[in-house]
Image (cartoon, rainbow over all chains, first blue to last red; front, side, top):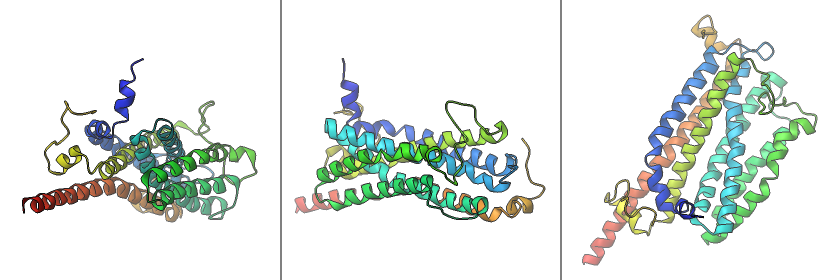
Length: 257
Length: 63
């Protein structure tokens, strides 16, 4: 089997140069989708019969919650690949994912608390879903702190990867918490295995927001990883050439080396 | 697709729920903008700093 593609995928320089052309398209798709879905949800989706207009928070809360959990899996998988194959790029992806994931969890916790006030009559309750989600936020914070805690980069990467892998246990707990424990948080409105409980007039803008948020996440993960690549490869000739404006998007003949 | 509010005022008020909905949207979009802009700016600043460092090294070697 030809593993050349896999080794090329592990090259920070190849990743940096390859993603150069993707960024404008991802930017357009992400922000186009976020603005379309956001405006649709705010102004054109019908009012909910029970929650009235407060339910419109769903269009930002749910997509970001989905992505914040996917981000954790990506961080853990990147950490595992880095540990197993001792590749540089996955550790850079892992480090880039942690602050992004933390920002996503903060947005979900804040919007959830504000949405909770008119819906449940309280900002916060220590139930299964909210508590396990708060733990997710702390896990991201833990990875960020571990990255800063060690002087030796390899040790920091390994420790962060192990914490990321251990923390994956929390994701199914978050997902199933609304089924396992009595909770104020409502069960999922969107399910892969059964029909959505939402009317299509409310569902379409939500689907657009979910799609746009995943694209946005991909975009920011790529941007953060590119910054990390430059920092870690600052002594490489190609980064020096880039700083001096010599190579631009990269020399095709040399890329992937 | 129809605008769901009778006026701009009704859109902002959202039946007294605007006070919860609008801050959420403003906060989230502010964070999303910051997440987009910050890596682009930091990358630019890093490359600028590297360029300066390389030039300093070159000048030192020339002496």
